[in-house]
Length: 403
Image 1 (tube, rainbow, N blue to C red):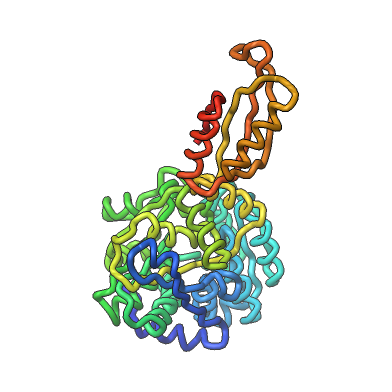
Image 2 (image 1 turned 30 degrees about the vertical axis):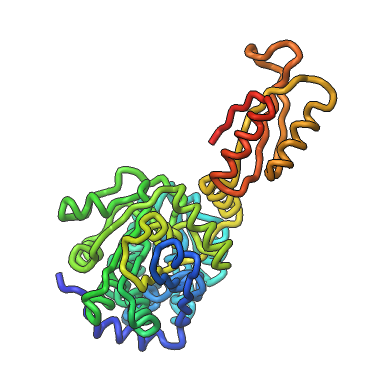
């Protein structure tokens, strides 16, 4: 199997002129300080349709014959590829049908329909949606547009790499979130053709990681589980095209935890003022988890920004907990008037903010006249949590922290 050539990627770049945005690259002071080198963020979360996927989708659809376009196209996606295909189809006057998992985020579902696609919900995950899309293609003659495993898709995604070479000519490392490997393989093909010295690193959610086992086996291997908030990279198995590119061109694949994903997303939101989805946060999480590991300047691709507001609220809370910004404690006090007010005043003096209070008098371990008070507190970080627990203990309370 031949690798996608840089000439093909450059042709895709010319094709996409006026269709996509050349997204900005931003220096991140906070990531640079934490990682000991210059870190820059490539903001594909600001791309049309909210992710890089429009690049590959338009390139693929444009390459179809007039006869193929007349029969329409069909795709399967958790959301971003769906939007890319739907938008590309609208630009090329082609009918698009998209199959999405039943749990697809509502904003992605609504956006896909708003671009004119007919959407069907099938299955609990992407694999079932892919099967349904292939079945539809066989029945109707519609052209199946794979979310990652096609040379045109890789060529389109590779245009991100060409932009990076222009925007950050001195970069030494590029970190890319990966699921199926279309973006990672395309960027690697573009970057390595011009700068073989640049280290290309993939980042994957550890609870949906097919790449480490696949690379070790020398062939695509299904992931053992797909339990991650990063639905955009929750891919069961790489395809043969992306496997060939990633195994040939990518220097390293790292995995990141759910806690790291939520911390990275929160950092992007708080410090960089950038809204990204959990899949995009994987690349940031890899850099945060391994400070000093990569030579700089480092380019981190923020692959998308399409996130359900409800999920965002959960992820923010998860990220604040993982970052030591929340503390849950159970404190035993006497059941007398003024005892709770005294406890809350002590918490305030220790600099913590009370979010929630719950009394409990029902416990076999409680002495008569005692009450357990469960407190949810907002703190300033891990060390402050310990200071709060130590301060309440010093005040004479029996404190049971839940870190």
